Length: 359
Image (cartoon, rainbow, N blue to C red; front, side, top):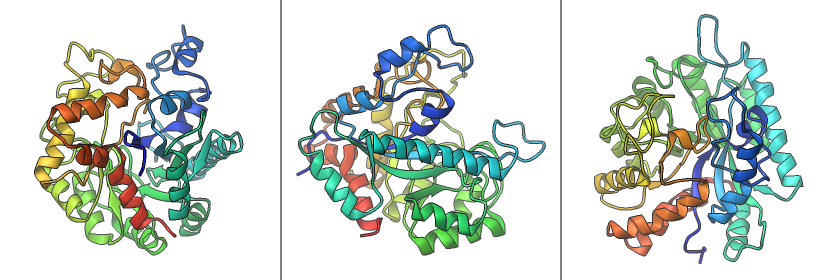
Protein backbone atom coordinates (compact mmCIF):
# COMPACT_ATOMS: atom_id res chain seq x y z
CA UNK A 1 0.00 0.00 0.00
CA UNK A 2 1.12 3.52 -0.80
CA UNK A 3 1.40 5.87 2.18
CA UNK A 4 -2.22 6.85 2.85
CA UNK A 5 -1.49 10.57 2.75
CA UNK A 6 0.97 10.62 -0.14
CA UNK A 7 0.19 13.58 -2.41
CA UNK A 8 0.84 13.72 -6.14
CA UNK A 9 0.95 17.27 -7.53
CA UNK A 10 0.10 17.29 -11.23
CA UNK A 11 1.81 20.60 -12.09
CA UNK A 12 4.85 22.40 -10.66
CA UNK A 13 7.19 24.77 -12.53
CA UNK A 14 10.22 23.80 -10.48
CA UNK A 15 12.97 24.43 -13.03
CA UNK A 16 11.45 27.76 -14.04
CA UNK A 17 11.62 28.92 -10.43
CA UNK A 18 15.17 27.67 -10.05
CA UNK A 19 16.53 29.34 -13.18
CA UNK A 20 14.34 32.38 -13.87
CA UNK A 21 13.62 33.29 -10.22
CA UNK A 22 17.10 32.17 -9.11
CA UNK A 23 15.74 30.12 -6.23
CA UNK A 24 17.72 27.27 -4.70
CA UNK A 25 14.83 24.91 -4.11
CA UNK A 26 16.92 22.89 -1.65
CA UNK A 27 16.43 25.75 0.82
CA UNK A 28 13.34 26.03 2.99
CA UNK A 29 10.57 28.33 1.81
CA UNK A 30 11.39 30.65 4.72
CA UNK A 31 15.05 30.87 3.65
CA UNK A 32 14.08 31.60 0.05
CA UNK A 33 11.69 34.34 1.13
CA UNK A 34 14.28 35.94 3.39
CA UNK A 35 16.83 35.95 0.56
CA UNK A 36 14.37 37.87 -1.65
CA UNK A 37 13.41 40.61 0.79
CA UNK A 38 13.64 44.01 -0.90
CA UNK A 39 13.72 42.56 -4.42
CA UNK A 40 11.22 44.13 -6.82
CA UNK A 41 11.95 42.53 -10.20
CA UNK A 42 8.98 40.15 -9.85
CA UNK A 43 5.65 40.67 -8.08
CA UNK A 44 5.95 37.50 -5.99
CA UNK A 45 9.40 38.11 -4.52
CA UNK A 46 9.63 36.94 -0.89
CA UNK A 47 6.22 35.29 -1.31
CA UNK A 48 7.05 31.87 -2.74
CA UNK A 49 5.44 28.68 -1.44
CA UNK A 50 7.44 25.80 -2.93
CA UNK A 51 10.75 24.16 -2.11
CA UNK A 52 11.88 20.55 -2.00
CA UNK A 53 11.97 20.49 1.84
CA UNK A 54 8.41 21.86 1.96
CA UNK A 55 7.31 19.18 -0.50
CA UNK A 56 8.82 16.50 1.71
CA UNK A 57 7.20 18.02 4.79
CA UNK A 58 3.82 17.80 3.08
CA UNK A 59 4.47 14.24 1.83
CA UNK A 60 4.29 15.49 -1.75
CA UNK A 61 6.62 12.78 -2.93
CA UNK A 62 5.82 12.88 -6.62
CA UNK A 63 4.85 15.55 -9.14
CA UNK A 64 4.62 16.47 -12.77
CA UNK A 65 7.45 18.97 -13.25
CA UNK A 66 7.67 21.23 -16.25
CA UNK A 67 9.90 22.61 -18.89
CA UNK A 68 8.58 25.86 -20.36
CA UNK A 69 9.94 28.11 -23.09
CA UNK A 70 7.46 30.19 -25.05
CA UNK A 71 8.30 31.44 -28.55
CA UNK A 72 6.53 34.65 -29.46
CA UNK A 73 6.25 35.83 -33.07
CA UNK A 74 6.63 39.46 -34.11
CA UNK A 75 3.72 41.58 -32.99
CA UNK A 76 2.95 39.34 -30.00
CA UNK A 77 3.38 41.33 -26.78
CA UNK A 78 3.37 38.36 -24.41
CA UNK A 79 6.65 37.61 -22.63
CA UNK A 80 8.69 34.94 -24.37
CA UNK A 81 11.64 34.18 -26.62
CA UNK A 82 12.10 35.77 -30.05
CA UNK A 83 12.94 32.48 -31.71
CA UNK A 84 12.01 28.82 -31.30
CA UNK A 85 15.72 28.03 -31.02
CA UNK A 86 16.00 30.25 -27.95
CA UNK A 87 12.92 28.56 -26.47
CA UNK A 88 14.48 25.12 -27.08
CA UNK A 89 17.70 26.25 -25.40
CA UNK A 90 15.69 27.46 -22.40
CA UNK A 91 14.08 24.06 -21.97
CA UNK A 92 17.47 22.37 -22.23
CA UNK A 93 18.78 24.53 -19.41
CA UNK A 94 15.77 23.50 -17.34
CA UNK A 95 16.45 19.85 -18.15
CA UNK A 96 20.05 20.33 -16.97
CA UNK A 97 18.75 21.66 -13.64
CA UNK A 98 16.58 18.59 -13.11
CA UNK A 99 19.56 16.38 -13.89
CA UNK A 100 21.69 18.34 -11.43
CA UNK A 101 19.03 17.78 -8.75
CA UNK A 102 19.10 14.07 -9.55
CA UNK A 103 22.89 14.00 -9.18
CA UNK A 104 22.50 15.74 -5.82
CA UNK A 105 20.02 13.07 -4.67
CA UNK A 106 17.19 15.61 -4.37
CA UNK A 107 14.99 14.38 -7.20
CA UNK A 108 14.51 11.30 -9.36
CA UNK A 109 13.01 11.17 -12.82
CA UNK A 110 10.13 8.78 -13.45
CA UNK A 111 9.85 7.82 -17.11
CA UNK A 112 8.63 4.22 -16.91
CA UNK A 113 6.29 2.02 -14.90
CA UNK A 114 9.32 0.38 -13.29
CA UNK A 115 10.60 3.78 -12.16
CA UNK A 116 7.16 4.56 -10.75
CA UNK A 117 6.89 1.30 -8.81
CA UNK A 118 10.35 1.77 -7.31
CA UNK A 119 9.57 5.33 -6.26
CA UNK A 120 6.23 4.45 -4.70
CA UNK A 121 7.92 1.70 -2.71
CA UNK A 122 10.48 4.24 -1.44
CA UNK A 123 7.69 6.59 -0.35
CA UNK A 124 5.75 3.93 1.57
CA UNK A 125 8.10 4.82 4.43
CA UNK A 126 10.30 7.61 3.07
CA UNK A 127 13.69 8.21 4.68
CA UNK A 128 14.68 11.73 5.67
CA UNK A 129 15.41 13.84 2.59
CA UNK A 130 13.96 11.20 0.26
CA UNK A 131 14.22 12.13 -3.41
CA UNK A 132 11.12 13.76 -4.86
CA UNK A 133 9.94 11.94 -7.96
CA UNK A 134 9.02 13.85 -11.11
CA UNK A 135 7.43 13.13 -14.45
CA UNK A 136 8.78 15.55 -17.04
CA UNK A 137 6.21 17.62 -18.94
CA UNK A 138 6.48 20.43 -21.49
CA UNK A 139 4.09 23.35 -20.97
CA UNK A 140 3.55 24.82 -24.43
CA UNK A 141 5.17 23.05 -27.40
CA UNK A 142 6.66 26.11 -29.14
CA UNK A 143 10.20 24.97 -28.29
CA UNK A 144 9.83 21.74 -30.30
CA UNK A 145 11.80 22.74 -33.40
CA UNK A 146 11.04 19.58 -35.36
CA UNK A 147 9.71 16.08 -34.95
CA UNK A 148 13.33 14.97 -34.53
CA UNK A 149 13.52 17.27 -31.51
CA UNK A 150 10.31 15.71 -30.20
CA UNK A 151 11.84 12.25 -30.43
CA UNK A 152 15.01 13.51 -28.75
CA UNK A 153 12.87 14.92 -25.93
CA UNK A 154 11.08 11.61 -25.52
CA UNK A 155 14.45 9.88 -25.30
CA UNK A 156 15.54 12.14 -22.41
CA UNK A 157 12.31 11.37 -20.56
CA UNK A 158 9.66 13.86 -21.68
CA UNK A 159 6.35 12.12 -21.04
CA UNK A 160 3.64 14.81 -21.41
CA UNK A 161 3.09 17.88 -23.58
CA UNK A 162 0.60 20.72 -23.49
CA UNK A 163 0.57 22.01 -27.10
CA UNK A 164 -0.19 25.62 -26.12
CA UNK A 165 0.28 28.05 -23.24
CA UNK A 166 -0.99 31.65 -23.43
CA UNK A 167 -1.89 33.22 -26.77
CA UNK A 168 -1.31 31.85 -30.27
CA UNK A 169 1.39 29.21 -30.47
CA UNK A 170 3.19 27.25 -33.16
CA UNK A 171 1.06 24.14 -32.71
CA UNK A 172 -2.19 25.35 -31.12
CA UNK A 173 -3.98 28.37 -29.68
CA UNK A 174 -3.93 28.79 -25.92
CA UNK A 175 -5.49 30.86 -23.16
CA UNK A 176 -6.87 34.26 -24.24
CA UNK A 177 -6.69 33.45 -27.95
CA UNK A 178 -8.90 31.84 -30.57
CA UNK A 179 -8.04 29.39 -33.30
CA UNK A 180 -7.42 25.78 -34.20
CA UNK A 181 -4.37 23.55 -34.45
CA UNK A 182 -3.54 23.57 -38.17
CA UNK A 183 -1.21 21.27 -40.08
CA UNK A 184 1.71 21.63 -37.65
CA UNK A 185 -0.51 20.85 -34.68
CA UNK A 186 -1.86 17.72 -36.28
CA UNK A 187 1.65 16.54 -37.14
CA UNK A 188 2.77 17.08 -33.55
CA UNK A 189 -0.21 15.15 -32.20
CA UNK A 190 0.40 12.27 -34.61
CA UNK A 191 4.00 11.96 -33.44
CA UNK A 192 3.03 12.28 -29.78
CA UNK A 193 0.55 9.47 -30.27
CA UNK A 194 3.18 7.31 -31.99
CA UNK A 195 5.66 7.83 -29.16
CA UNK A 196 3.08 7.41 -26.40
CA UNK A 197 3.45 10.95 -25.05
CA UNK A 198 0.55 12.13 -22.86
CA UNK A 199 -1.48 15.06 -24.18
CA UNK A 200 -2.04 17.78 -21.59
CA UNK A 201 -5.26 19.59 -22.58
CA UNK A 202 -4.51 22.47 -20.18
CA UNK A 203 -4.44 25.98 -21.67
CA UNK A 204 -6.02 25.01 -25.01
CA UNK A 205 -8.62 27.52 -26.16
CA UNK A 206 -12.02 26.05 -26.97
CA UNK A 207 -11.45 25.60 -30.71
CA UNK A 208 -8.00 24.06 -30.25
CA UNK A 209 -9.36 21.85 -27.47
CA UNK A 210 -12.05 20.55 -29.79
CA UNK A 211 -9.70 19.92 -32.73
CA UNK A 212 -6.96 18.45 -30.54
CA UNK A 213 -9.19 15.87 -28.89
CA UNK A 214 -10.70 14.97 -32.26
CA UNK A 215 -7.22 14.44 -33.75
CA UNK A 216 -5.44 12.75 -30.85
CA UNK A 217 -6.27 9.19 -29.79
CA UNK A 218 -3.63 8.59 -27.14
CA UNK A 219 -3.69 9.25 -23.37
CA UNK A 220 -4.90 12.67 -22.25
CA UNK A 221 -5.04 14.57 -18.96
CA UNK A 222 -5.53 18.16 -17.82
CA UNK A 223 -2.71 18.83 -15.39
CA UNK A 224 -3.93 22.11 -13.86
CA UNK A 225 -7.45 23.23 -14.69
CA UNK A 226 -10.43 24.49 -12.72
CA UNK A 227 -14.13 24.53 -13.57
CA UNK A 228 -15.71 27.18 -15.77
CA UNK A 229 -18.94 27.00 -13.80
CA UNK A 230 -17.15 28.94 -11.02
CA UNK A 231 -14.98 31.29 -13.12
CA UNK A 232 -16.30 31.93 -16.65
CA UNK A 233 -13.14 32.08 -18.76
CA UNK A 234 -11.61 29.87 -21.47
CA UNK A 235 -8.74 29.04 -19.10
CA UNK A 236 -11.24 26.89 -17.21
CA UNK A 237 -12.95 23.70 -18.35
CA UNK A 238 -16.63 23.71 -19.23
CA UNK A 239 -18.82 20.86 -17.99
CA UNK A 240 -18.91 19.48 -21.55
CA UNK A 241 -15.10 19.49 -21.70
CA UNK A 242 -14.83 17.85 -18.28
CA UNK A 243 -17.20 15.10 -19.38
CA UNK A 244 -15.34 14.55 -22.63
CA UNK A 245 -12.02 14.31 -20.80
CA UNK A 246 -13.29 11.93 -18.16
CA UNK A 247 -14.97 9.78 -20.81
CA UNK A 248 -11.41 9.31 -22.10
CA UNK A 249 -10.18 8.33 -18.60
CA UNK A 250 -8.39 11.63 -18.03
CA UNK A 251 -7.37 13.04 -14.66
CA UNK A 252 -7.98 16.75 -14.04
CA UNK A 253 -5.70 18.51 -11.56
CA UNK A 254 -7.30 21.40 -9.67
CA UNK A 255 -5.12 24.52 -9.44
CA UNK A 256 -4.53 27.15 -6.76
CA UNK A 257 -4.00 30.33 -8.78
CA UNK A 258 -6.49 32.78 -7.26
CA UNK A 259 -7.69 34.26 -10.55
CA UNK A 260 -8.80 30.75 -11.54
CA UNK A 261 -10.66 30.24 -8.27
CA UNK A 262 -12.87 33.31 -7.91
CA UNK A 263 -14.44 35.64 -10.50
CA UNK A 264 -13.36 39.26 -10.60
CA UNK A 265 -9.78 38.75 -9.47
CA UNK A 266 -7.49 41.61 -10.51
CA UNK A 267 -3.81 40.67 -10.65
CA UNK A 268 -1.64 42.84 -8.43
CA UNK A 269 -4.63 44.45 -6.73
CA UNK A 270 -6.98 41.80 -5.30
CA UNK A 271 -6.26 40.24 -1.90
CA UNK A 272 -6.93 36.53 -1.26
CA UNK A 273 -8.62 37.08 2.11
CA UNK A 274 -10.75 39.97 0.89
CA UNK A 275 -11.86 37.88 -2.11
CA UNK A 276 -12.54 34.76 -0.05
CA UNK A 277 -9.87 32.68 -1.81
CA UNK A 278 -9.37 29.68 0.45
CA UNK A 279 -8.66 25.98 0.05
CA UNK A 280 -12.42 25.46 0.26
CA UNK A 281 -12.61 26.68 -3.34
CA UNK A 282 -10.22 23.91 -4.34
CA UNK A 283 -12.56 21.44 -2.62
CA UNK A 284 -15.51 22.97 -4.50
CA UNK A 285 -13.77 22.41 -7.85
CA UNK A 286 -12.79 18.86 -6.93
CA UNK A 287 -16.33 18.16 -5.77
CA UNK A 288 -17.83 19.55 -8.98
CA UNK A 289 -15.70 17.20 -11.08
CA UNK A 290 -16.66 14.25 -8.87
CA UNK A 291 -20.37 15.11 -8.88
CA UNK A 292 -20.38 15.64 -12.65
CA UNK A 293 -18.70 12.30 -13.31
CA UNK A 294 -20.42 10.38 -10.53
CA UNK A 295 -17.20 9.13 -8.92
CA UNK A 296 -13.81 10.16 -7.50
CA UNK A 297 -11.72 8.64 -10.30
CA UNK A 298 -10.87 11.74 -12.31
CA UNK A 299 -10.14 14.63 -9.91
CA UNK A 300 -6.68 15.37 -8.57
CA UNK A 301 -4.37 18.15 -7.46
CA UNK A 302 -2.40 20.19 -10.01
CA UNK A 303 -1.54 23.10 -7.75
CA UNK A 304 0.54 25.28 -10.11
CA UNK A 305 1.95 26.85 -6.94
CA UNK A 306 4.72 29.38 -7.68
CA UNK A 307 3.65 29.43 -11.31
CA UNK A 308 4.70 33.10 -11.42
CA UNK A 309 2.68 33.87 -8.29
CA UNK A 310 3.04 33.34 -4.55
CA UNK A 311 1.02 33.86 -1.38
CA UNK A 312 -0.29 37.14 -2.79
CA UNK A 313 -2.32 35.13 -5.33
CA UNK A 314 -3.20 31.79 -3.74
CA UNK A 315 -5.51 30.62 -0.91
CA UNK A 316 -5.00 32.63 2.25
CA UNK A 317 -5.03 29.45 4.36
CA UNK A 318 -2.00 28.05 2.51
CA UNK A 319 1.46 29.28 3.50
CA UNK A 320 3.61 26.66 1.78
CA UNK A 321 2.91 23.68 -0.44
CA UNK A 322 3.07 21.44 2.65
CA UNK A 323 -0.36 22.84 3.59
CA UNK A 324 -1.86 20.63 0.88
CA UNK A 325 -2.04 18.15 3.77
CA UNK A 326 -5.11 20.12 4.89
CA UNK A 327 -6.99 18.81 1.87
CA UNK A 328 -7.66 15.25 3.15
CA UNK A 329 -9.50 16.46 6.26
CA UNK A 330 -11.45 18.98 4.20
CA UNK A 331 -12.54 16.25 1.80
CA UNK A 332 -13.47 14.03 4.73
CA UNK A 333 -15.62 16.83 6.17
CA UNK A 334 -17.39 16.93 2.79
CA UNK A 335 -18.31 13.27 3.12
CA UNK A 336 -15.54 11.73 1.04
CA UNK A 337 -14.43 8.24 2.05
CA UNK A 338 -10.78 7.28 2.64
CA UNK A 339 -10.86 5.49 -0.74
CA UNK A 340 -12.13 8.62 -2.52
CA UNK A 341 -9.66 10.86 -0.71
CA UNK A 342 -6.67 8.77 -1.69
CA UNK A 343 -7.89 8.67 -5.29
CA UNK A 344 -7.87 12.48 -5.32
CA UNK A 345 -4.57 12.89 -3.44
CA UNK A 346 -2.53 10.53 -5.59
CA UNK A 347 -4.08 7.29 -6.78
CA UNK A 348 -5.84 8.71 -9.84
CA UNK A 349 -2.57 10.09 -11.21
CA UNK A 350 -0.70 6.89 -10.27
CA UNK A 351 -3.31 4.65 -11.91
CA UNK A 352 -3.19 6.78 -15.07
CA UNK A 353 0.61 6.56 -15.26
CA UNK A 354 0.70 2.83 -14.64
CA UNK A 355 -1.54 2.43 -17.65
CA UNK A 356 0.25 4.88 -19.94
CA UNK A 357 3.97 5.01 -19.14
CA UNK A 358 6.37 2.66 -20.94
CA UNK A 359 7.10 -0.57 -19.02
